[in-house]
Image (cartoon, rainbow, N blue to C red):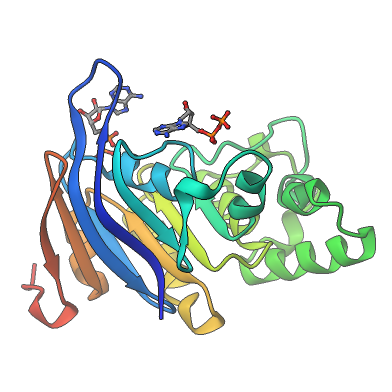
Length: 229
Ligand code: ADP
Ligand code: ADP
């Protein structure tokens, strides 16, 4: 079953040029794949259409067979519970502890405090942050901050995780650790779509790769067809 489907999706920004042109692809449930292409190719725009930060100009985006065009108003927040988002700049609240940052999505949906505590501690454990829960983001290393951002995206157990250049600010060792973590998610029921312009890193992961060029999907490479390098 497809968790995500793009059906001839185009996006033009007001007054701007075409960010996406007739893009079609499917992501199977439990799949991990990459989205690559030069700066300006449309990667961020494609991810924004999935978490409803933007709307397509033409075509349809389907999530679990639901057409996102019909997801409006209060349903947007419900949809976002099923899609975890990781940003390059992680967007943590600087005056809140690690624990509070990760708890936020659960607090917003009115979950009970005992349940929140359980889920947040489990996410902290999973990301190797158990001893950092009381720290403020400013007291953490870049890699730890990014892991908090990932914990916040995962705490609600989304069907799909989308990550926009999640290793853009990290050294190669930390990048590899984050990628290994992403690669472990599908077996837990979360599909993963990672946008990255770091071709070397993408190739090393040996997963399916979608390639965007000036808004067009120009390649959809199976893992076995990835060249070394
Ligand atoms: P990428 O993530 O691959 O760098 P983007 O999706 O950010 O690409 O951008 C694709 C194209 O859309 C670029 O030409 C960019 O300048 C343009 N663009 C992105 N966001 C906006 C916006 N909010 N308004 C107008 N143009 C935009
Ligand atoms: P709202 O209900 O406030 O419009 P939405 O989440 O539905 O919020 O819309 C998100 C963005 O999509 C907004 O920037 C809105 O202008 C734009 N948008 C709304 N309707 C359409 C449409 N039919 N086609 C393209 N973009 C749209």
